[in-house]
Amino acid sequence: MNLRVVQVSALLIGLVFSVLLFRMFQLQVFDSDRYKRLAEENRFRIVKIPAPRGIIYDRNGIPLVENIPNFSISIVPENVNSLDVDALAELLGMQAQELQEKLLRKDRSPFVPVKLKQGLEFGEVARIEARKSDFPGLFIETEIGREYPLGKVAAHLIGYLGRIPQGQANNPDFKNLPPDAMIGQWGVEKLYDADLRGTAGERVIEVNALGRELRLIRQRAPIVGKDVHLSIDIGIQMAIEHSFGEKAGALIAMNPESGEVLALESFPSFDPNVFARGISGSEWKSLMESKKKPMLNRVLQSQYPPGSTFKIVTAIAALEEGVVDPAMRVTCTGGLSHGGRTFGCWKKGGHGAMDMHSALVHSCDVYFYEIGKRLGIDKIHKYAVAFGIGKETGLGLVKERPGLMPNTEWKREKRKSPWYLGDTFISSIGQGAVTTTPIQMAQVMAAVANEGKIYQPTLIKGDYSPIATVELKPDTVRRIRAALHDVVAGGTGKNAMSSLVPVGGKTGTVQVVGKSSGLTGEKYMDHAWFVAFAPTDRPEIALAVFVEHGGGGGAVAAPIAKAAIDAYFGPRKRSADPGILHKPVQQKQQESTGD
Image (cartoon, rainbow, N blue to C red):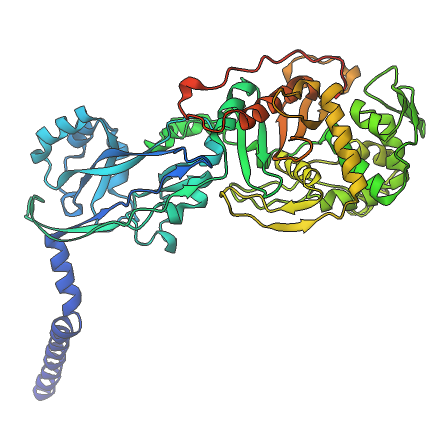
């Protein structure tokens, strides 16, 4: 029995020694490189060197952003556990809880310095340097920050930078960036982030037990990001900034022969510098909860009925389909009765006898009820969709809303109801279920201006290509252009008349509540549209203006379009200095000039 115990014990001892020998062999042979690397990393500090971001320029070479020195404070990870968090928070002017959250971030590397605070003032740098020895491993870095000298101007277009969110930490696009790196989070800064941010460099520094630098082991210089040359004209952006005043809305202008975006503004806007220096939770909450929705890009994300601006599409469809003689007259007495319901014209007393030209110039609703009846909704739908209404343009700045162009099939599937002639009347004048975005209406005007070519909207100068063509008869283009010229020369769009070039355009007014409701106040005011191109003979610019609760399109939106057109055709060399911005346009109260 004793012999058996001895044998079992010997066997167990042998097994234990075998396991130990195997583990020693594994550590010294198989894992030696890993533990050697860990030991080296414990002695060396690896510091990423952010690359200077590329500069964003407008089409005339005016810089829209600046790179500026930016100081930040970081700490070596191995010194975190012995840190007096309360004392350091007091030194940095931070809440202890906020500091603790940064130190305990799950996505941080054990070998990469933890960034504690960015955007330090010179006074803060001096104060921290004086007490740095009290906190082993604490050090100050000089980085390159971003500044937006134009503030809110073009903010929805240019965008802003922000730190990599924890949810994106594993994104392969950011694998070579430190966890606190600033990347594009909005607008052009995000859309072209991969090009703008360049390639980070690296410094490997030998440090002692207190985290003090002993010597530089090696360094790899960063590669500067590529510059981006946009198609926009900052002069137009600055002019319309003042024209909108306190109104909410949007303007987008395009080159009809290329699809290049010349201006893109959404109001109200925001200051991207708040994000560049590190937005606080309270600031972010204020922006998100604001009733004015400053973070909504109204050019791409506001979809509303286009109102009488849609009559351009209805008129083109009628001419192309041959359902109406342009000289045919329809008598407008102020409304049209059908099925026990009256479909009114904006002019209560009526326009009298209207042909197509005069109906567009004076925006007669009754005339378009008649040609809508002759066309039918499915033919109107065919042309509207061909012009891009009811589908995303693919500009890419933000998630775009598609709008809606209804037809008989849509109503049968979505509303479980047949299409009625009354639906056609309302759709023919851009009301009812028809909704569109400002960028779609600008694309419609660009196609009218260039005789039917549809270009992919682009933000990059010189980067363009046609993606479709709406086949239009030369006579159709001539008639529509002539009528839109007269809309501005003496019709509902006269407030868009420019002394620099002849302008063609169309007004639109969208009711928020019925006229008989008796409700008053800004939130019950009509929405205002104006679409235009200029000059009328050889158009170089096409645009759409939308003003939420602005009132009449002719009174409110047309003057903003004039300001944009004058800014484009004025002196071509402009300064981006806000001190020489255009004066505000004096907007008139709505006159009884229809849409």
